[in-house]
Image (cartoon, rainbow, N blue to C red; front, side, top):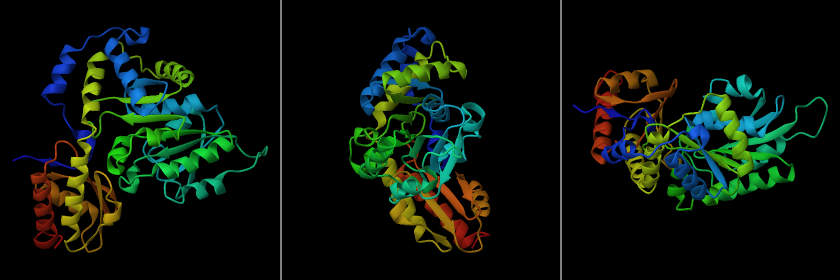
Length: 346
C-alpha cells in the first residue's frame, strides 16, 4: 500500500524528465564559473525574480546564511519575526557564522508587520547594536504557509530604505505566494534587496536553492559560499534538475487546491480546529481541542500509512506537494476520521 507523505514538500522525488535532464547535463567546474548548466540556471533565476544576478546554493538555509553574511558585519543587528525560519530552524547559524544579533519581533510577518517594525527600530545609540538588515519570509512557514501581499512588503521596503537598511526575503516558497495571489513573482521580489528561493520544495528538485540580488551582492555572496564549502564543481547535474523544476511553477495551484480540500475535510471532524482563512497555499495547520494530542495523531496516522509532523504539542502540519493526488487527500481524510472517531483518539 502506498504511504501518503504529508510531512513536507521536501519529500518529493525527481521524475523521469528530471532524471533524464540530469543525465544529459553539460557540466564544467563551477568554482571557475565554467559550468554552463549552472550558469544557465543562475541567469534564468535572476531574470525570473527581477534581479541582476543569482547564485546556486546547496539549500535554503545556506542561501539565507550567505545573505546574512553578505549584508552585515559582526555585531550588527538583524530584525526578524520570532517564528521566522531563520530564527527558529537554522541551528543558530547567524551567531555561529555571521556573528550577528538576531532581534525577534512578534507579529512582524503579519499585516501589522510594518508597525511592528517601526516600534522595533531604535535610534542610534552607543548602547545599541547597529541595525543593518530586516528579514522577511514569504510564504510564512510557521504561519501555516500564509502569504504576505506585495503591498505589505512595499511598506516594509519603504521603511527600510528610509533608514538605509537592507531587506532579505526568505522566499523558500515565494512561487507559492505568487501562484496563490495570481501575481508575477517580481511584484514580491521588487520589494527586497535579496531573495532566496528553493527548488527542492514544491518545485520538486532533489536539491538546491537560488540566492538573487545585485551583481555586487552576488559577487560577495559567492565568496562566502566558497568559504562555507559550497564550491560544488560539476554542479550542472543538480542545476539541470533545477531548470526542470522551474517549469513546475504553475502546477503549484494543484497543491493549493488539494490543501484546501484536505482542510475542509478535516475541519468537519470532531476535536480539531482549522482556520480555513489561513489555508492559502499548500499547508494545513490542525489544532487538536479534544483528548487527542498531536503526538497521538501522528502515531495513529502513521499506522494508517499517512505520515505527518507535529508542529507543537497540540498542532500538526500537513503539506501537499506534487506527489500528493486528490485521491490521496481523500484517503488522508478517511484515515483521520478513523483515528478521531473510531480510533484511540475517538
